[in-house]
Length: 214
Image (cartoon, rainbow, N blue to C red; front, side, top):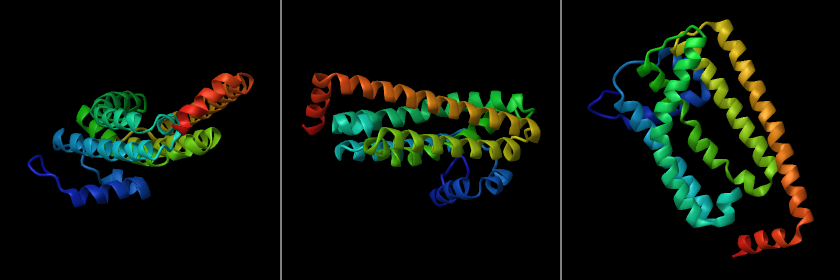
């Protein structure tokens, strides 16, 4: 893809390749060519994720989005689009730091392009957001699985595209995966405590149920 045009067919192919064969994709990914392409990719992912969140909101499905309906869905759509742009550049900084730790490339454009490719996870995460509306524990498990998969993709991006040191990238990936697991357990404990509070406070529970049925 060039700076003057955006190849949507190539974008779709790249998105699929990142998900199904990340090692192959990142081994051949261009790390130069300007910021326009990764910015457009991030915006598309943000819009798609935002539309999915909006649909879940209108259908009143998916945790707090489903609880408060379309109004929050619209807010989430706007947030996803804005967050995609902000997240692209903040994420590039984070990837750059991680790459530096792993003795990989510290070129900001390369890290930005890697980050844009990683953002394919945004629509996936939004699509699976309905799980939290079915059950908080199921939602937490799904969220953990998505985050671990994103970490798996990041590992291949570090090694293949940013030429990070293999052993260091493996160790860092394991550490990050362990932290995700720890946060998952902490989150489950917090949700269980909140559930107990609701069970012991009938007035608050009835109020939330009334809001959900409106």
